[in-house]
Length: 59
Image (tube, rainbow, N blue to C red):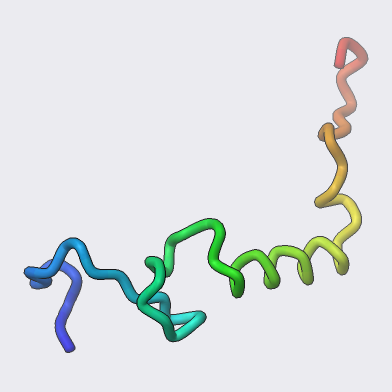
């Protein structure tokens, strides 16, 4: 175990959420990340709005 700044292996990945070496933890198509986003969106209906409502009349 070592810090990222001390890592010599820049081409190997490991996802802490999935505990797999298929992708990096920051990969946006990580199955765990996608599931957590879906769970959050189901609890927060405003997240699925295509536009953000504002009080400005011109919008």
